[in-house]
Length: 349
Image (cartoon, rainbow, N blue to C red; front, side, top):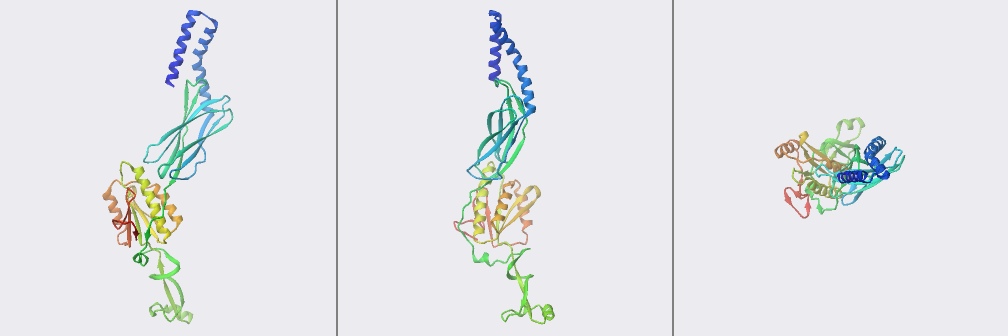
């Protein structure tokens, strides 16, 4: 813009020089038009600013890492004259500065123009697409007017997911975990909850006889204890503050998605947990199906890094005081998975 204004000023000075030398009618007319042009352009842009608006169109809520996302920008003009415009977008995350993209077009009076911008999702996590501004130009492209256009959309970028070699040991299969939920399909050994009451069978122990109901039904009735739906495996996520938090979150999401998906495939119910520093607590998510896995990944995309390690350790101790797990799997900033503090090629839980 500055270069064009300089060229415009040079053109005016040159025309003025010809006016004094030649004293020609054509030169005089051109000089008058050049002098009046800034005022005409100002009125033109002032009217266009009130009649042109821009917003983001439909942006998908979810995308895949490494693929391009199409972001439509809708620019509507109610102006009676054609207008040249340029929209600016920013695409980035909470931890990575956004990259700006610009698209220019001409607007036809009374029409809505759809501009398509393609953004490549290089890292998994929460991608924010923001419409930062709309610039209008005059006929010659010398002067401009900026229109405020704020529109923000968030896209969840799904990490790469792969099946990891996981072996569920007998220790985990037979681990009796405390739980607030109980199975409705199988009985167990938890005496705190009754699964069902049925008639006595020869192999039933005498201690399971329900004497009150037996007297009421005039038959020997026994109670079956419930099977607790506790979690024997804990997936501990340690997201520490660093200089490359966007890449660290990408590694964590990839490892968490692959690990939890693999545990779900082998029917191993587990719990994922991570500290939430601002609320001084540990966030817990029980994963027992693909649906709960997807909900976990959505929550992890909003996860914040921990800066106070001592506070995080205190939250861990308070949240799991008196709670035991058969195996603790830890995911660190690099996405490495530790089994009870050790590295294993075959994950034995």
